[in-house]
Length: 137
Image 1 (cartoon, rainbow, N blue to C red):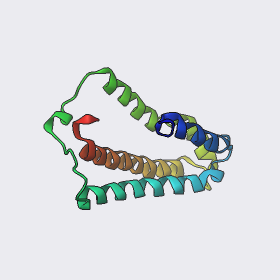
Image 2: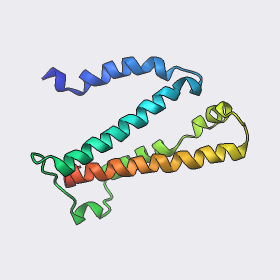
Image 3: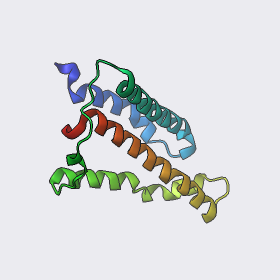
Image 4: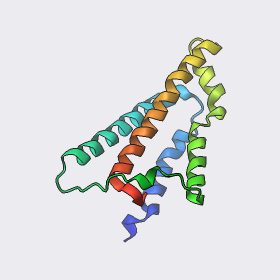
């Protein structure tokens, strides 16, 4: 079916996000961060509820096999995606210029709050997906 293809939702989403991506000031994007974190929190909450209370859903669960490292191309490409997610050097100067108090100490505080938050979100989504899909990931 055409409506289940990747293009059906990727192209309209890209068309909506293109003007947002062209914004120059980070302050204009503050509402997007609120929507992003709210969406991620809702995703985690809904999936935890489904894992815990939905009697029709049978999670595959974790096996010890998922914990063993695999040196395959998919693992290496997933590692590069994770490193790219944490690689925000291109945003250091825009983030710094948007700070009220532009100094290194203030930037270090912002970075020290942002990186653990991002890591926690990745961890929660990874655990939930592992519990839901097991070794089929």
